[in-house]
Every structure is written in C-alpha cells, then in structure tokens.
Length: 255
View: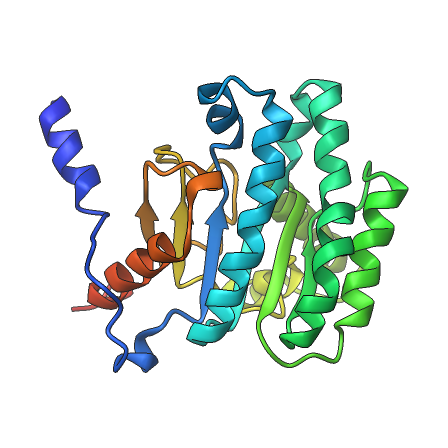
C-alpha cells in the first residue's frame, strides 16, 4: 500500500522545464496553500515564528515569477479560520505579517502593476492588519497586472454557508425564486465572484488535503503537491508545477 501511495504521489512531481512556447497553457489562476513554515523552523531548531518570517520572503519571489509568466490571478492561503486555534503568540505574529510584508513590498507591487485583493472575513482581524491590507488594496486598485488575492481569515465552509444564508434571505423576501438557484447564482455570492476558478492548486510540505480552502472553486482544478516546505519553495519549484499543468488534459467530465 505504501509503495502504491509513493508512486501516486511521485506522479505529481517533475523536473522538466516549462515549455516557453506553450504560453497559452500557462494557468490563468494559481492558488497556493503555503504550508510547512512551522516544520521548517523545527528542523532548524528555531521558533515557529522564524518559519513564518522566512516564508514571507518567498511570497515576493513567486509573485514576481507568476507575473512574468503571465499568470493573471495568484491566490495565497495566508490565514484560515481554523488558524485561530494556534497559540496566541503565534497568531499575534501571523497578524503582524501582512503589515510587515506590505510595508516592504507594496512599492514593488505597485511598480510591477500588481493588484492586491483580500478574500475572507474581516471579523476578528486586528485593526493594524486590516488597515495594512486595505491600504494595499486601495493603492493598487487601478493596477491591471497580476491580481494578488490574499485569503486571510478565510474558510471555504464559512464562505459557502454565508452565500447560502444570503440566497435564502433573498428567497424569503421574494427577490429570488427557488428555480433561480443554480451554480451561476451561487458563484455570485461567493468571495471570488469577480474571479475565475483556479486552474492549478499548489500545496507545499507533503500534505495532500484541501484544508477548507476554496472547496467549491477547486472542483475542476489541477492539483500539484510537493514535499518542499514553503520557506524552501522557489521559482524552480513553481516552474515544475506549471510544467506538470501543461501536460494535464482538462476534460471537465467530457472525453
């Protein structure tokens, strides 16, 4: 059983380079579950926050490469609704990271024509975190390049439930009829209503699960898993993921 699992997992990795001629096959929307910061720190005998600090440095490299390759949307799972269960010291540090990252990188993002976007519940976010992200969203609102979508205090089940509640209220008030409810309508009530669904999902650190991330939107996405911990993830690994994507046949249930 273990041998079968290892072979299956290995099928998600490749060292083959991106085909530069296959520009049309570059995924338009890439979503990343940035996992492994804590384990990276533990392996080096460092506190967990050191892993988060190092992981923050990786973001700018991947944003720049995604932008250069022609990726249109990059969604990063920065903090989940479940992450509040972590020790308070770690949560407090994680809530400072958007301010630190954007304080350093915002001018570069503006220069690269990147548009910052936020996806998640604003509830419980510290004011300093919220202000930092809102400032970035405001100052990049007119940019026309890569959309950098931060999933912050985000949980897919929460998102879907909130959408269902909103639709139920519309039905109850008579603004919608039951027969009006379809996939297209539900999409309009999700936090990604103005975005296309991800074409490719990347998850680092060897974990093979979605962890309550974009459960609706990832229905037909291609998945790519790697054992590499997020602080060690680099442009070459990102290129590997794109190369695998280019070899996939996306049939959407057809032949």
